[in-house]
Length: 374
Ligand code: SF4
Image 1 (cartoon, rainbow, N blue to C red):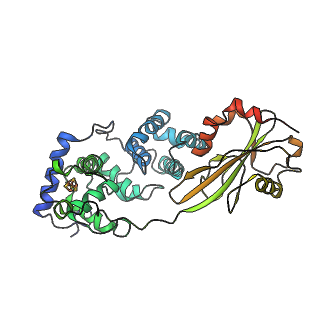
Image 2 (cartoon, rainbow, N blue to C red):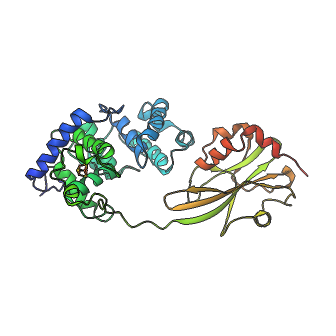
Image 3 (cartoon, helix red, strand yellow):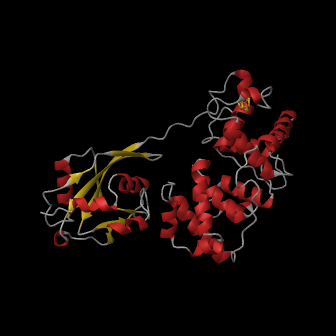
């Protein structure tokens, strides 16, 4: 069945109606009092949705507040420098979200005269906006009947209606069911209700079935399938990488470089780094530095940090920092490196683990301690 918006739905059965009405009743009494519960402004909703992708609400709220303080309007965001935005984004991860947000803001400002599109398709065409984000924006801001299908929603639907498929491979089945259940009179409220229900009642572990309005009809509850649903997608293979970051010490300053290659942390800054195929020891790091061509002569004195592990969704990074005191006359500085006084490092957007290292292990004043030249 295709409804008036061209979105596929099923026929609304009695069970579907019971779910819809029960959920809305539950939400009116128990919905979370989140700061954005009554937002209707597409700009703020868009920022919120992008910040909260792959992010817990508690972690995202301070970032969202900070972004709205710096960029209260689309115009301010469109005119911002991407480096400034990345700096504000530090620690939130998935930095492509920030880059895409910035590109989309410029596109909207230039092509829509600073106004916001109202259609789902126009939002979907923007950089970094997927079906879930587009549905959230048009349903919350413009009351359009598009169902949000995120992880919380899928878990609830899989259990309540016994959808025995993984979201990755059967997204359409989840979208069709969510679209059928959606209340076309109040799509934004319905979407928020379903997300809140998934986040607080039908949780991944130990859902509160005994107090759930739907337990008499819930397939997972009735058939004892709660721990089996939703079906998990096959795990992505995680690749381990061994990286050494070189902190050169030159009279109160060091070198950093921007990551431009199509790789992790694109457009962020980092200390110059090299990669090999296994863990590091002192001679190996010296050989690595020797072969880099960055130095005319590798100094005898180097300090190696312990190895840190940093996990990304698809990569496991084993990271070591090498402190290298060096006279500038010995360095053959490649194009793109920037010399930065220690005290200015805080002004650059670094990956989270570098920021943590500088904060917890070698704050600015301690960097000077490595400056023992030969
Ligand atoms: S009965 Fe339990 S598993 Fe089923 S929808 Fe309610 S909370 Fe989720």
